[in-house]
Length: 227
Image: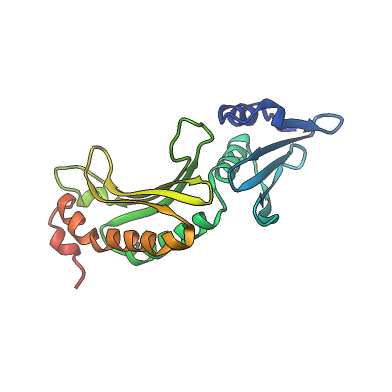
């Protein structure tokens, strides 16, 4: 059976209470982790004999499963990677809406010559000191050979949010990495339906400013301007 001690350590480092983690079976062949976010009850089960994990997220508001999936792994590192993605993914309506906007933004830019990749990442924190527990990044990476003397290769579209009663408090930035500058900022609070057009407008502004921002950080940027 696979040694799950590194996995257990990863779980506990996320401030999940130890009592939310339990082994099952005569030889501890399985382990279950239960935890809760503002919107979901989450369960992650590891089958040590079969090198398989099952995970599900139950929406508290609707009592319906947002995801129910099994996945195989071949190392404890892969197991931790699967768990981290499950832990950080919100599966909420806010999350799904932002994902749709990010996918459209990515599709419109990914084929450009100067872009190496565009990667989406989610982060969740249950630390009460974090004002915005949910963070969603869309990170655009420029090809190294096209950078100018500023040596900035990263442009991040970021949206952070939290729930306050029945409303969403959201903050957004378009910012370059490694000590770069902020080019767009967005703040709003309200119901998701009221916020949807505002969030969409912010993402559209970020897309509209890409040509301008790109010219600041790339060598001979006129080569990459769209006609």
